[in-house]
Image (cartoon, rainbow, N blue to C red; front, side):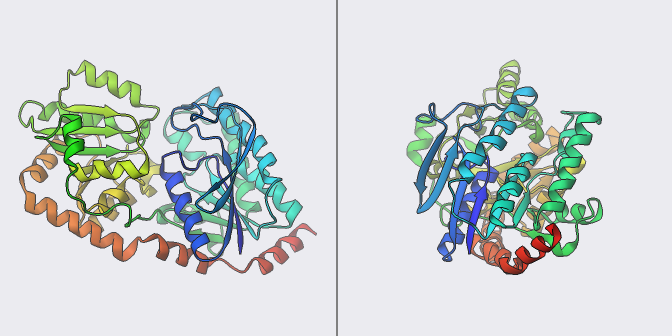
Length: 417
């Protein structure tokens, strides 16, 4: 089959959506399917174009044998008008990239942003091609739950767009079991219209490695037990409580050091908090490429993932969970929901409640002082992803859920006639 992936986010950007779509595209191509990607000039997570993308409105590239059509957008991060301009501009300019693609059998649309269903539908009308609407976050619910926007006229418009997107899509794809349940029970999406494509583990890139001694020396952390956070630093993660746990351990366990590698909307505030607490056991580093981040997993004794307690995150599986497990390091998950249950099922670390710095501090001390326990949980996590979360198996299962495009097109044509 021929797939067209429409997404605002794609490598060389770093993030959950970028990683998932990269492996989906690569595995589809490995299985003999043809794949094209329409995406933006890379600008996430800093809201600034990557070097070499500052000029122009369109660029055609080849990445790992796949054709990528990149288009300009208004670069921005955070919330408010600038972020809406960011989403809205790509919704318009992506049409320029879609015009340059071959006729696909399926259009796979990444959401958020929610608005990409519109250009996918327009292109689908032209090609008589069905589109798959991928729900990575339950927009607009997440906007309200995080406090970025209140119920009102704008939210009613967004909910109307959401409902329209679900109706027009041939399939609605989910990344967690909980989102699938919500789609059926609260959004009235028929079960036969829902596909499941969860985040997976790259067990080739991330695997057990000896500590990278030159990196430890470079960072000045050779004698430390490193707690690693690798990924986006967002308001949804409640990282302020991690810094409070660091303060609790600073004097009693000075050998435990917190290393944050990443960027995001909360980063500046977290750095300010670290300075106000006079923390000496915390280091913030800029994001690094995928082939370099593996070095950081080699030097940590455990990894962290965290989400604040809001209803919409009950079904979240943070992408930063999987590299930790694949690297055979224990993971401490701060929060509840599907991500926490995955860690417990895999026996891959520990779960502590959100908003409880003391519980996190106690858990870190336990793993730092009990090498056998940490090693056992790390091996269990690696075994779990090898048996359940390999990308090859995940994509194979997803393809098996897809009906041949012919009958789907015929059904859509009948609905339009």
